[in-house]
Length: 308
Image (cartoon, rainbow, N blue to C red):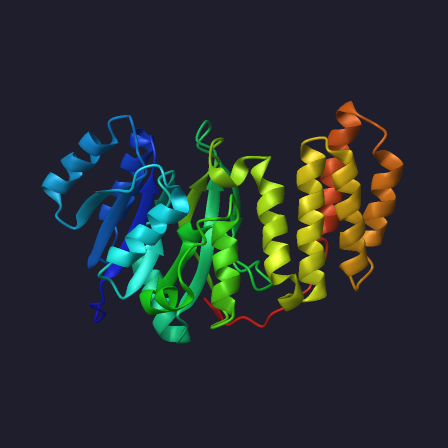
């Protein structure tokens, strides 16, 4: 390859030394070799430091820092601040980069001229090692989650100020909306990362999820397309429905219906009102139907560059 730019991969970690090994090894295995891996430890009490030091002895591109008990967003910001690379790739400690990730993403950035690209990913089960699903160019609005599939120019992250450490969840999506005020991300139709379902990740704490989404809406709903705001209100409703908070679920289904200029979500509200009285298996079926309505024929709201 003619490219020689340094890529900085940033991995925040906390008490996941066994999973972290896979993340490190997936970085070492990259076909594009001009990288540095910055591991930021958020106060681990397991053998994380010993594990990382074994890799550092073999590869001086791996660097280890401590940023105790400040959270994943602070750890990522710490990594960005000390990064030497022109390009930033994030990798959570429970995810894995496919070997071609850096090479493919750098090519896509150069081809598109974009400073922020969002690539495809594969979701797998750790228990069965089976593929649950694959996602490529599905994003249709301003926001983008799962930073383990991002590549961003460091200058862009420096300009917008990094992750908001006050958000209890949705920090990466909040950052993507802030970046969108400077540059619309490009969609990269190549699967570059494997995401594993992990029960204790921040984004999956059920009580934090609606709070983060509501903070996001409070900050950006007036800058979103009405259908995108409706979708987030719908997502908040689903979060409350998942924890059996039916009053809040109803309120946010109603807000979603009010914002949805297509008027599709009013049918979801109607369905919810009729079926909510049932529990057990009916509730499980209701969640599937409500989830289907949420995503049904969702329109392209932002014109993204697509790089294949």
